[in-house]
Structures are given as C-alpha cells and as structure tokens.
Image (cartoon, rainbow, N blue to C red; front, side, top):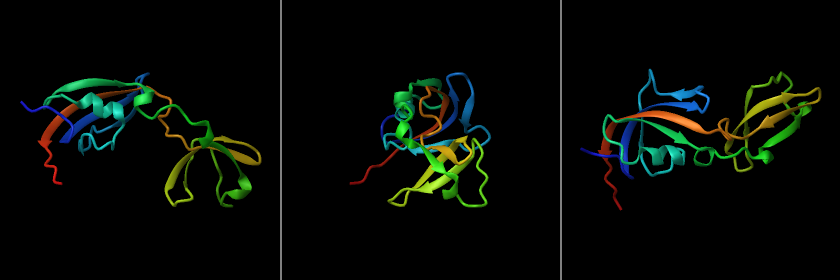
Length: 148
C-alpha cells in the first residue's frame, strides 16, 4: 500500500479549525487540494503531518503556531491617516484592503481600528498567533517523477 512521502503528489480533503473548534477553511463541497509534498507551498506543520499517511487514511493534525503562521509581527500593524485613503472609502473594522510593497507584490491588510483621523491596519496573516487543527483524508497518492 502506498504511503505519502516527500515528492508524492497527493490529493487531500481537509477541514481547518482554530483550537476552539471554529472552522476557517474546508474542502467540503469542493475539490480536494492537490500538491506535491515537500515543495513548501503549505504550512510546515500541515505537510509534516501528512508524511507516512496511507491512501484513504483519515487523521487529525494539531499544528502549533510556530509550525503554522507564527506569532503576529508588531511591525506589520500600522496607523494610516484617513487623508491618505481614497476619498470614497469608508473604512470599517474587519474590512480587507490590498496594498503594494515597494517591489510590487500585493499585501493583504485588515482594518483593525477606525479612529477619527486615522485607521489602524494589520498586515499579519489572519491566522498568525493561532494553533491550528486539521482533519484530513488522503484521497490520492501519485509518485512524482523528478527530472533533472
């Protein structure tokens, strides 16, 4: 019976939850995610938790924040004057914004506070600072052919 190992191409059904049970993402009702294990496209704890799983095996993976999105970075929380925002924008707590870094990459931001003359935005990943729990099921395992 085949097992998941580094460089396996796998398909996984999953439900991601916070430690308190609140669901933040799921493949339920959608296609399973497909990826090559070991290419670091997913959080480290998720990939490590899948190694050695067998086809159709179900498992709960508990991931500490250091193996997920880490601790929030205080330098990614900044105050911006409302005068710097588009005139037609009415910022609200929880509103998502997109900005560009100096090198042109998109940065997702969240409004976390609205003051009279400014807003406070957070550029941390929304799951930073949280331990995560994933219920997973491996639904396909393919050996990946590596060409050099």
